[in-house]
Image 1 (cartoon, rainbow, N blue to C red):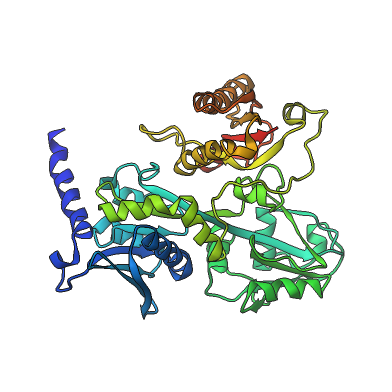
Image 2 (image 1 turned 180 degrees about the vertical axis):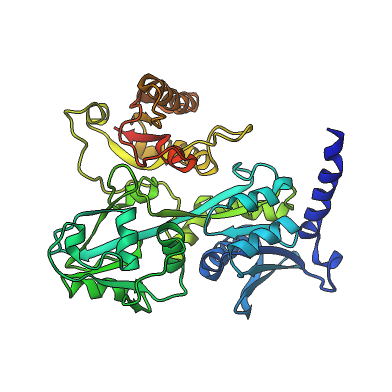
Length: 445
């Protein structure tokens, strides 16, 4: 262990500058909290949460100032002491690098850190811990077609072929013989960034794609053209005369309903995250913890994003009552979440979102209107191809872990059951697919 001591000392030195007041770092008299990273989060989402947080903890004179295209400052005062919250918007990679190097206390990411970033951040500890990762919103892509289009579903691979132009006729996707008219958001945009990261990779979008300044314009173009398709945001209003396609990623084809998006069962969803180091200042930790709470999530909704607030959503078609899954949840309604796990952590069983969702679930069930209601917990596992019994046992363990926690908190559990590797959301043996498939649903009677 002795050979690790210098590295730990180095980590302390790297993190200290972000925690010190500005008087120790520059000539200003104001304390400064630095939040750097994603432009998507930094434009409206994080400033809205910061202003809500400052008001909540007693700051006054709250005012927002655009210092440059890449930096916003929010200034406020409490007990005569000024504070500047610096929101830098140079991208997720730059924000995470600033966190690692001690130039920011909190990083805003519109994606998960990649392997190289995690390796560079070894000194930050368990980045998937609920104490360091804070999921503040979700977003994603929806594929919209004209209601007269017979195509109902696409795989992610087919969507890639469509958007790159390799498939240019609907007959190649099971539709009629007609050219595909593709509509996309204008680049650069968060929608196009996620399309590239999740679907396209290094391949460019089709050169003949029509681009629009807003996602609403792209969706409206589809309503007027039976051969059109648009890639819009999951929170976009879908105009009359159009519908969304179910998307499959090696498993079930899932529609982008609110339940499927908020549970992340739908494959084209991404999390918006904040990351902090283990030595966050009191102010930094106060904001990070506030960001996942109810009041901050109201600000998320006002900023036009899908908040993490737990509330019922309209139910899709009930599962087939002739199947074990349908029998298990008969007479119940599903809540819009799926609890997932942190297999790599030594400190927590659930991932950061799962840990917070579990607390939201408990608070929801304790509401006066939910007194007397009971929970059904349904676990799923990943098929590792070796033994079906192993998947069944593991799914039961997942469900029982959640049920036991709820019971200890006084929440009535009607039933806890594992469904093995049925209803797989993804196919393959990679860690990402296993992560999506290993989950627990919660249903309420």
